[in-house]
Amino acid sequence: MVRHLFLGTTLAALVAAVALASAWADSAGGIVPIAVSASAQETFNKQCGACHMAYPPVFLPARSWKAITSDLAHHFGEDASLDKATTKIIADYLMANAADRAPGVPAGVLRGIRPDDVPLRITDTPFWNSVHGNIPAAVIARPEVKTKSNCLGCHSGN
Ligand code: HEC
Ligand code: HEC
Image (cartoon, rainbow, N blue to C red; front, side, top):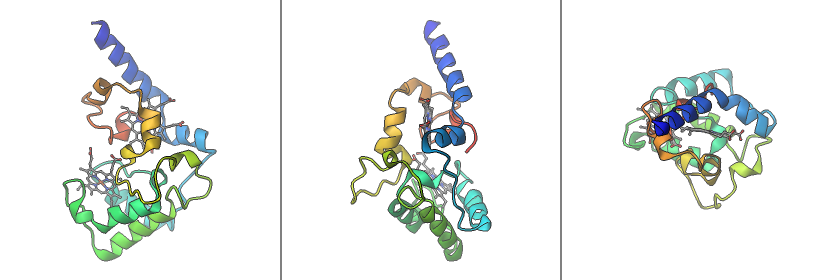
């Protein structure tokens, strides 16, 4: 009983407390993606938001986005491939807005990623793990969340 109450309260607090965009803006002094063009951002949102949230590009370095968009046919067990032109629009958008390219990104986002590391998951980065290290596995396992990649299971907005 007490245990359920604790988890319920924790999750409610997570959902209410953390609006992804505003939490990020607070810590980063207001970073908004620089769209390569409005239509590139739209293309990204539509295609890369089809199965999960369109992850903010600022959480991975450009080389990670390059690697991800270079092999969309083998994308975490799914075929997320797109035609060549669309893939290029999205790759350019992601790289221009990446952690090591967008202006004003706090150094902490890249800390602990060695120059030859190419993380393919935001959730594998030391930064992500440093801000999420205290979340109990039981909270992540809840039906509303299911996986740590489901940012919107805990955060609102994008
Ligand atoms: C056909 C469905 C599908 C599409 C379309 C898709 N993805 Fe994914 N993506 C997945 C799955 C499945 C995972 C693994 C999720 C998990 O482990 O819970 C994933 C995971 C990811 C991750 C790692 C998330 C983490 O844990 O940090 C990134 C980054 C990512 N996708 C980027 C993209 C980009 C960029 C696009 C657009 C080019 C895209 N995805 C389109 C299915 C898709
Ligand atoms: C299981 C719930 C959960 C999931 C899933 C989750 N987060 Fe979080 N996130 C939190 C909590 C709780 C905090 C800490 C809030 C605090 O301490 O103020 C946090 C903090 C953050 C912060 C730091 C905010 C700041 O002000 O410094 C960022 C950035 C962030 N999350 C991004 C993400 C991204 C991107 C994903 C998906 C890849 C994700 N989160 C998935 C719960 C979650």
